[in-house]
Length: 241
Length: 241
DNA sequence: GCGCATTTGCGTACGATGTGCGCTATGGTA
DNA sequence: TACCATAGCGCACATCGTACGCAAATGCGC
Image (tube, rainbow over all chains, first blue to last red; front, side, top):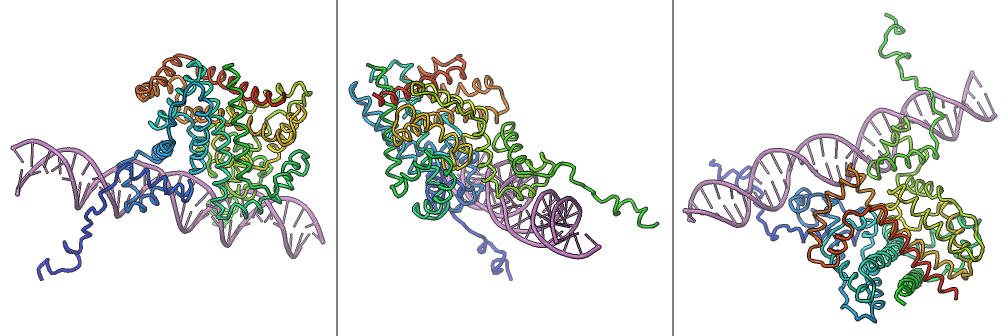
């Protein structure tokens, strides 16, 4: 009985896991994290779950990412990378350019609702390259539109704050619905009675809820967004006249 | 050796914890939660820690609060309760009234920075009484200012989105500084070199950072907030003809 | 081709977390 | 006095982030 013939604790029985996958890379980890977050929400992202989606152990990820917070920073910037950089419009077109950026920023947040919560935790302290690129570009649009560098900065902050504020509210709603596992219709219908009861003592809120009953929520969100965006841009435009 | 003289496992050694404190109440729990959150940030709130601050076990809290999320809902509404309800201004004064609400909303968020993260998670789905009261009041200001009920709703959403957007960014920064255990000065000085390196390839961002160097951050945050607020209100005012 | 140094993956383990369950004591009511 | 609803709590469980150290794999200088 040489050790070669021992079937159990032998070289041949040893795991022999060669690296089939071309290993693990930071980009791959971040991309999979974004996918997981989109599919299952922010609470579903644990290092173990992410690891097993990549056929890897949980702690393997730490070779490429310092910790979970850093992973989120990277994921946020990855999403920022989806934003198109609209071509620099001429002086007449600053407003159209900003509108376009505002709309695609909102759309991106709604496509990845978890990002709202993360931006709420970290704000603008992220220094990710995609975010910086986008910021630089926005400043450029305002400056070529006629704003001084200082005011371009303030104008940009105003628009971005507005868009993030609106989109955060919408995204939070989407996240809650997704977490509930129901359709948007079901969820709204389950919440509605409680909401109506809660606003009973407030005439204006009652009227508001009554008016919204049966309306398509997504459509009126969109309308509200556009209304506010136009007001913000009106206010900025009047500074140029 | 009668069992009376046994000092260890006897009736007298038994804990004998009478209820000195008038027990535990939901209000008390929420108030202490807000205090803990203010002092130590959102990560420091665990049911065990909150319990021990109230001389109670962790699971005792569950008699008064369904779960941790509900506790946060209550805490958020508790903070909303701090907002003053400004007296309803006349038709000429809608703008001043909104300004006042906007400023106190921002101030409240900065006093309780953790609330920004929570609002980012839940948005406007909170139906807390204080939040409802405040919303009703805001709608009233816009309506008496001359906005139709529908447009008052949109106008309010716009202002609130802007204020939340700005304040969320500021609050996130404050939370990060607090978590780092450093003073704001120290923290900024530690971050600055990395930031300057990151923006090197972007001329406008580089100029912006250069201009901000040495400025008082809180003061320029305040200026930015006021700038944007005035633009938003300008845009709304122009709708009144 | 070979030997060594560095990098990568992972098994194990630790402390902390949210919370379900069932026991016990308390205080009010009949 | 007997009873019962309720508040508080100890215990337990599953899950989490992540520190540590070993083993395989890879890259590098010869």
